Length: 404
Image 1 (cartoon, rainbow, N blue to C red):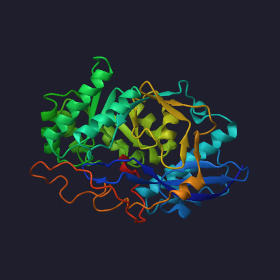
Image 2 (image 1 turned 180 degrees about the horizontal axis):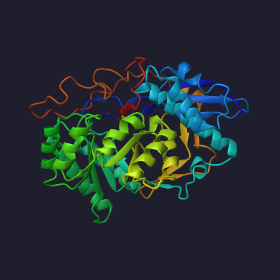
Image 3 (image 1 turned 135 degrees about the vertical axis):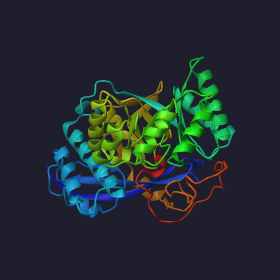
Image 4 (image 1 turned 30 degrees about the vertical axis):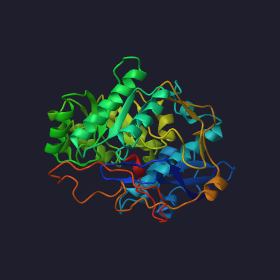
């Protein structure tokens, strides 16, 4: 079997409400989702979700190769970008191609990827994550009631702009999930998306922890700030989670060896081989791993095969337009199916028929860091949903989309 070519598509994830974080929101709920489809001479096509940046350059490393040699091909792609570097969107392109290769390998074997990777249990524990900073309290309650109906008993809220606002919403969701859990205390997390300084992070979390037992605080300071993450970890009771925006083991190693991270995260868009390697590194330090992403189907399969998986992020309960997934959500877990490969199929006519362009890098999107991030003297009003409307712009999203 040989790799013969690739095709690209871009669909949209229609949330039906505003989604975003402390950096900004997609007010109309439309988030672009780039897709890469890798073809072979035996008629098997693999699918990966992720950026198309420098795709011709990266693909040259695997063209004509046997797609079943996934680990070696992953390293070939890394070497292909040696001089310019593989960070950012380029790492997302490598991850999307890597995911497609794993899909091909499992499809060729006639097995679901979770089985091929050595998984035993098809159920993957999940937590709810509504990308919810733009929601009113009433809409927040409605959103998390829907998660609760699917058995979700842990939730991660977006915050970081106003401690009183964050505390009120955490208590609201805590009470809602407690009722759904028949009195059992739910798990709560808060994601600041790198919007604080070290002292701001400790002060904000310390205030919340007077009333709420946080499992983790996510990305409290900049992703590469080893000393800052250590300082936050020492100043709060909650675990420190980070890693979704780190690319390559070389970026994880300093944080892990310094004790700067308690929950090791990787983005769905970075690919399966990366996740497996990061999981092994984290496991060597007795640290748990937790995948991040809107549609983390590849990492869900991989999570079944690593010993230190904690829980995977469940964002929307619906897939992007034209994307079907052989996975359900039951009793608070993703349940993977028996379809060969990823269990992911693309309805290309449906994608084409519903195509609309969304600006993933507009100034008010979550993918653009605000000029005052980390320099806010006073609390800032949380983002409020703007009137729905389609933005006809053609820029793709940042590598992780709103998952960051």
